[in-house]
Length: 110
Image (cartoon, rainbow, N blue to C red):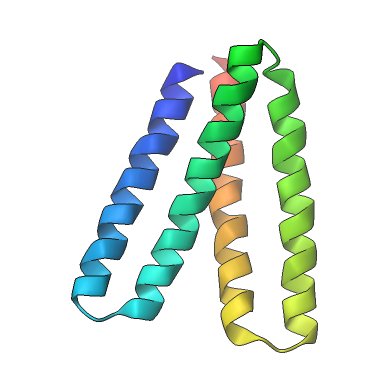
């Protein structure tokens, strides 16, 4: 599980670095989207760390599922409101979360 958490932290750092570079290039929208994805990896790493430290790693999958449900509902609300930027943000969060969940499943099988 440590490798999983470290991988999420590395992805987070790379995305934050990419966001900083995009800001330097005055590509603020792209930077925001990178930062959103980075935050998902950071949040998921933190959740996993907390539950690993508590000895309750089984709870992590449920929390990730709750994130998926909440962010999917937020995406649907954004679509109903035709809010393009919010739609993009929620889609990016869900894509990053799907990657985290796949990595988590692989880490649990090791």
